Length: 346
Image (tube, rainbow, N blue to C red; front, side, top):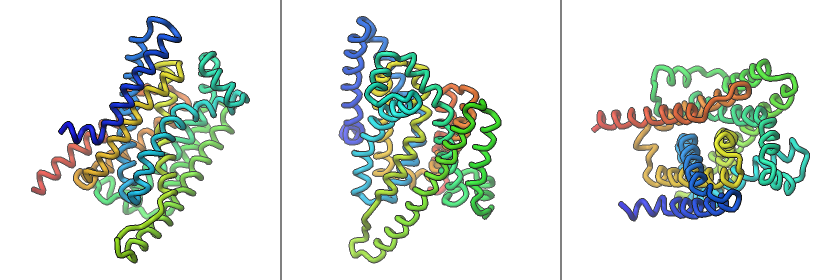
């Protein structure tokens, strides 16, 4: 048991230990005597990240199963560097740099030395960011229910969605969500939000189309290969990174309500991201999605809820505890339903 745990979660535990040590010394350097308090905040941020991203782990595992072992390994190694450093630190800095018209180095200094101003610029960027993420994730969820759902969980609803056969309905719904958002936000942000939403849709369509081509190519390669294997996977790797980026927007932006220190935020979210990676690895190796067949539906319901919450959050602030709780309810319920189904089949 311990050996299995260390195999899948050993690196995450190691990152947690070093992360806590780094957070403690950083806190003591910035404000002597605040180390214990910051350790609690770091722990809370890590839990927040895992809670918000558990459904992300399910979706990651679903896509990873289609990738070659080489690209699976690259996602679980290179991908975590992009997820931790790129999305949890560099991406918010880059966004603030764009809106503040400062270069990256000065923006990093701003984040460390003038937290109030940094948070102000990030707040300005909030609506366009969550609109991009909301549009991208809404298409991920709708594509699954309209075209990819092989094991309907709520059968009446999901079979109806599968049988609609309305061409590009997922795109029409998402464009409508962006359009409705335009009526809710301030006049000053309408253009930025529209551009962000359309960009999210276009990025999804481009990457998803490339992934479909790649899947077909790999299926042909498997059929023609004596070894039964295929090569390739960059576009799926990119698709997974974009999904992770969209998921992380909610956690990154929400984390500033818990701490204003970008270093502590990065450490806390990085610890959480490592455990999400470990959960993904367990799901792939244990064939969890084949054993618990309704998990995919539960995760995609959670994705759709998250996308709607992102659109709403352009106007109304929604606590992260609500977002995380709804995600866990859907994923947890689908897991229990899968257990019940498995017992019936025995």
